[in-house]
Structures are given as C-alpha cells and as structure tokens.
Image (cartoon, rainbow, N blue to C red; front, side, top):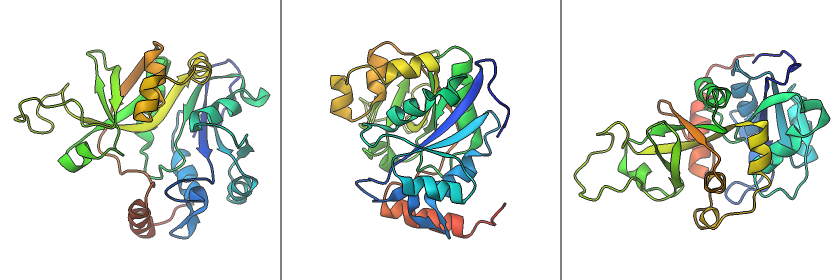
Length: 262
C-alpha cells in the first residue's frame, strides 16, 4: 500500500465497510479464523494493494474499531443506520480528513482472498474515465452460474456493465453453448469491489432506490439505471468471500494452512 498523502486531489482512499449485524454470520467481522478475526485477514490482504494511498475500516460498532486498532489498523466509527456498505464508505469519504482523495474504493469486509490485482483493476478503470470500476471472473460451473448468491454481469463491447442479476445470465436459448465458449458471452460472476470517482460516489449514494434494485437486491442497478457508467475488468478465478458457515470452514482451512507473515 502506498502511504503517500493525497495533496493534489488525486489520491486513492480504500475503505473497508464492516458491521456486526449479519443475517447469515452474526458478528462476522470479529469471527476468528485461524487465530485472527476476519477483519484482520481482510485488512492484511488489502494492505498489499499498491495503488491505495490510505486504508480505513468504516465500522458500525466501537468493538470493531477497538479490534482494528488492536492489530495496528485504522478505523472510523460511522452511523449505524446505513442501508449499504457503499453508504458507509461515502460517510467516511466526506470526512474533512479524506476530502482531498479523488478516488474512493469500496473494499468488501468479507473478502480475505481478494487478489491485489483485482482491486487495482477497479481503480485503473475509474482513473481512465469510468464513473465506477469493478471486476468479474469467468464462471466455470453450472452450479455457480445457477446460484442466486453468485451475482452475474453481462458486458457491452466496451467492457461496461449492461446488467447485473442473481439469475443465470446470459440465458442460453438453445441450451447448446458450453460455459466459457465465446469471449463476450462467457458467464461472469461479479466480484463486489467498487472504485468510484468522488462525484460518482456522491451521486450513487443520493439516488433514490430503483425498482430493479429492489427486485434483484443489487444496489448497482440503481447506478446503472441513473446512467452511471460501470467499467468491468475481467480477472482470473477468485476464491469467494466469507458469507456462510461453509465459506467460514473453507477460509479456516485455507488460512490455517498458510504461513503467516508479518
């Protein structure tokens, strides 16, 4: 992580939203995995992103703040009534301390395996003119393609998002095309990391909810419907984040066998 200050309005601020309330895994940021809380594994992972100038945890509870500060990270206590992690990120971005940063990245608090290259791809997209930058990975199994918890995205010819859905898209009308058989029609799983220009983040978090967003449960449909351009970088396979008990067991196995670094 680049520790330089953002003095020219062009720095990159990384924000990890973290909240204790989780429908599937209560107190998720503080759940211990291989001897460390999940939020610490995420923090350690995100510090490998060279394009970040600052990294902050946006917490909804003092216990998360204390935990983050305990392992040497930096956390900010935010409001408890935010509807999404993006709203929490926006609150931090508007603090006087961070107003000089021109780009803001929403780094999910349950992604301890996110490659630095995926975050950097999202950052580069907004730096080159997209309102929002995100990434997606090819889907290689029918189980993942049909899983509603795996969000799918289809792209236009410029690499921008056309639509996000929990449904298996693009639909194969004939049923004859194997997964991954055509470059632009390859089913893609969206990876929930977002880079924003400051103006795009402000707009994204002040727009009213959209009917498509409510139907799919995907806030990025609000942004698309309002005309925000979302660039999508294609990255290699990425291990899923920690959202279920099965994910937790898998993370324990992976991280428990990994040589710890300081």
